[in-house]
Image (cartoon, rainbow, N blue to C red; front, side, top):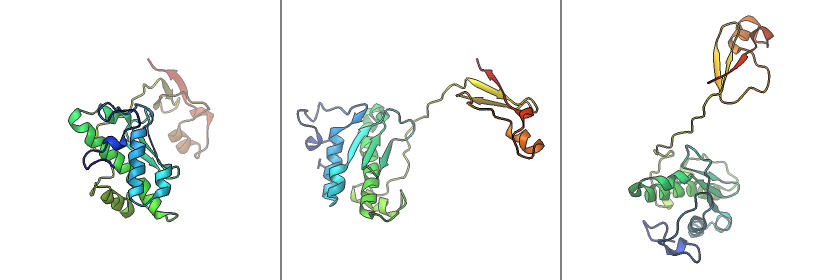
Length: 198
């Protein structure tokens, strides 16, 4: 494993790349982090996890810094971690990576027993990985992508307007009016009328 505070030491760099020149990919599998995860799992006596673990970057992630998938021993990281300021980048990447690896370790140790995602087993795994007191959520400013709303649907009775990103694929009526005036059943009198926005 890399030296304390140096998560990406020489041992974690893929063959043929020098430690200083290795850059994490923006998407797909990260060979260096996969190697580090396998080494850490092996150190904790989890050979099966070490053989199966994979770390990748998912450019489709928006607000989460990382995710762990216990069933297939996989960690996904948000490439926006690589865009953080220099003084913050390495620490946030290290903590996010270890946070997600702690989930895999906790689930591997639990076996078939059900555990809480951020319960005492995860907290113990965080402690064992050198991040005691880890918070369950990150404090990074990863704002969700805002999609423009293109459609407006108006109730012909109460004139309530519902704006949507995607077009409705079936007939829909105003919930409030159907509930109040049609005993909660669909009534074509209250069917929403579509219009296009801007």
